[in-house]
Length: 231
Image 1: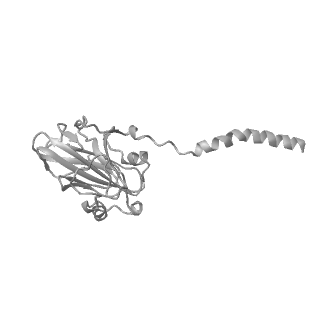
Image 2: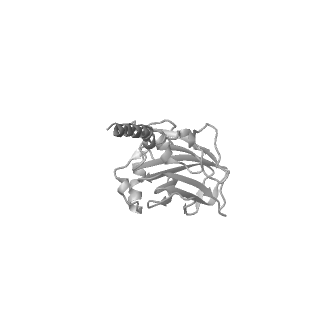
Image 3: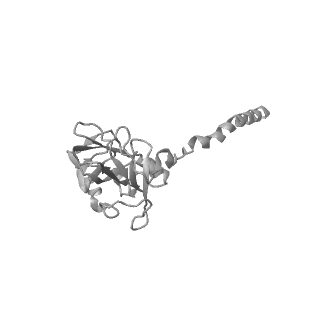
C-alpha cells in the first residue's frame, strides 16, 4: 500500500505540468490587429500599386445575411443578394469615412490595404464583427487624367461578387470561389476623364474572404496613372 501510494504521488507529479499546459494548447490564437492589413486612408490621393491594383477603399462593416453559408452562389442567387436595392444607403453616392448606416448599426471605414488583395475577413475579424454569412460593400473613386477606351476591369474575389463602374454593372463572379488575380475580365469599358466611381459587393459563406481589382489597358497592361480617393 505504501509503495502504491508513493507510485501514485510520483505519477500525479509528473502529469501536473501537462495538465497546466493543456489550456494553452486549446486557447484561441490572438486576432491580428487591423494595422496588419490596413492603414487609415490619407487626404492625399493615392495611386495604384506597381501592378496596378487599387488598394484604397471605403469598406462597410459586414452586413449579416441569413443562411448564405448553406446557399449555392449561383448567378441568380448572387444577383438577388447583391442587388443595388440591397445597398444600405443611396446606391451611387460616395459614403463618408466614419458615416453610419441609417439604422446606426454599421460604419464605413476609409482604408488603404497593405496588400494587393483586400482582406475582408481580417477587416471584420479585427473589428470584432461577423466574418461568416455576410456581405461586404466596397466603394472607391478613381480620377483618370484622360478618357480611356477599351479598358477592362480585372477582378478576383472570395467568394462571389458583383462590381459596378459609374452605376453600370461591369463584372460578376459567381459560385463559392477562391480569390484569383484577374479571375474575371469585364467587357471593354471607357474610363471617363476625371471622376469615376466603383462599387463592389462580396458575399462570404463559411471561409475566408478577400478581393483584388485593377484596370488593364487595350494591350492588357496595368493602368497606373490613376488618382484614387474616397471623397
